[in-house]
Image (cartoon, rainbow, N blue to C red; front, side):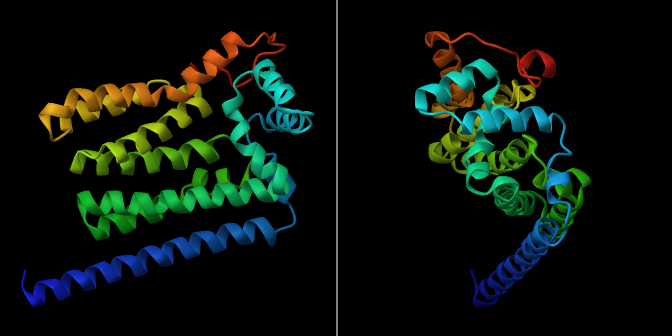
Length: 254
């Protein structure tokens, strides 16, 4: 590579970094303003679908006296992925804590979306795609509300970026990270039950090394279902009666 080409490449990289930083800063400032500057935080926080049901479950989980009681509550209430991953943030900061956690996840997802699209379609398309996604009504709303999409939506984007990285270099570390996130998404929202199979199909067709392609495909399925399978086993071996079905359970979503 000539000195001119290297200088041009560094210039493009610098431009990309500045553009992405500007998008992320604008997104962060918008959501920090929505969180701390407007007076209706609690109202917006409860606008999500099944927010009251989810909040009741969060509070009962956080009121558990010990780990055993907490596990029993999770099993009894059903579909814990719908709310359990929001519990630590809610315990630390209530509505503000959940909103800040969601904002952090969305910032990472926006960065991953930018790099994913830039790698395939160039910088201009990446800018347009990232800005459009940042301005979608759901992207504005979900980080501000008590919804499981605030976990699943950004994780899907991050996982897609990691899958692409894994396929490009036949990297099992990236593949494991990606399918691990997919597993969390399935645990969070059962509507994504077939997502690991979609990831495995993509890997089957595009994994560059033929000798490890089958292993990569099997790993994508196994890791993609790991969290919900482990949780199902926990429920199976723990003698706790289910008191009420979750409003967002598997049957409802399917």
